[in-house]
Length: 245
Image (cartoon, rainbow, N blue to C red; front, side, top):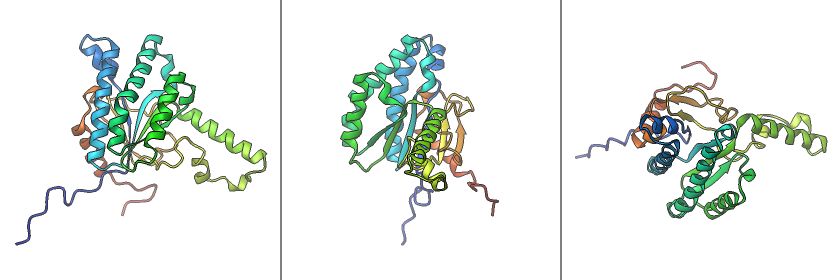
């Protein structure tokens, strides 16, 4: 007798690249009468769980919007708290991430951060560079508008120096000058907290991504939430500008 296939046998593969705008830490804390930093702390716990879920689900790339270039407008005490949590995350999690084969990559203008954070980021990237499991991409001090402007400047400089002709410039060439060079475009972008905007996140790269907006606040986001978003992704028809069959 032929055994019945497992429930996962016919399940579609997960999207190769999932990007998440982690939103709602402050509202989570406010609803509980807690300081905002408590929400950010719980958000780090959610991050850990989602990375583990991404590994279990065989997602190749997971990009998390940790700190935008606009977040510097927040109160200095909150910015300090966020930077402190970034330090803590890198110090505490690097060993486990490396042991589990996770490759860590940062995008954004992270070299403008405090010297000790830059060193932690450099160590995380170099330590995990040869890993071939999930690639965890963390966007820190990242803003898509500036990324695109800076890419344009680098291309213009190459043309001015004679290293590149104007006719050589196309979408593929432009993409190689972005922070995400070597990273496939996201298939799915998730935003938590119910807000429905990209907030200057991966604007070029997300041109054909499916967008899923969820009411759950980031500290409450978990493996089930990720599965729900991916299930929604699988019910979308991705046409890339073409007509449906």
